[in-house]
Length: 171
Image 1 (spheres, rainbow, N blue to C red):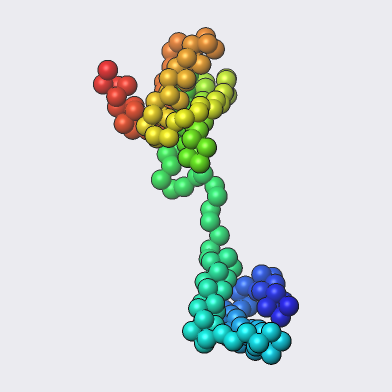
Image 2 (cartoon, rainbow, N blue to C red):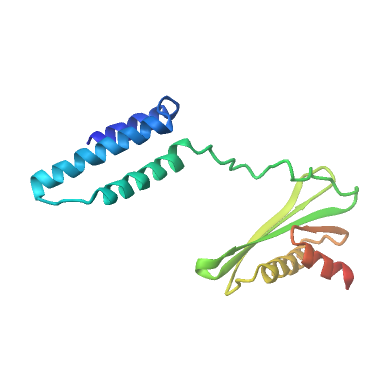
């Protein structure tokens, strides 16, 4: 209970509890908990075991409370600004994603005009694909077929898979 209250108070204001104070709180709680287990259950713990548990708790707290929040935005300074295709052409963006645990991949396709207006989009799932380059190649093939199905012929195809695009451009 005391540990839960300490952690909850740190979650409310982690800046108020710097790592040294957190270490003291966690250490004292583990000593108190160990004393209670010895008194109530007759379970003795070696001091090294207590220290190991303290270090594990502190690591967990640091990871979850003191680590800077990750930027979940897909934008970063290395991402290029979108460039519109010339008027009369469409830009076909294609990407693939692999889900290794289920041995599946997903393909996403977006077709935009020179104004940035989304003209068509689709997404598909494929089974038994685990190789990234194969996933990108399948996504590119689906993008070309989808573009034809939608009636677009003057296209600019973009993908983040350099090796697949180089193979297409070299053939």
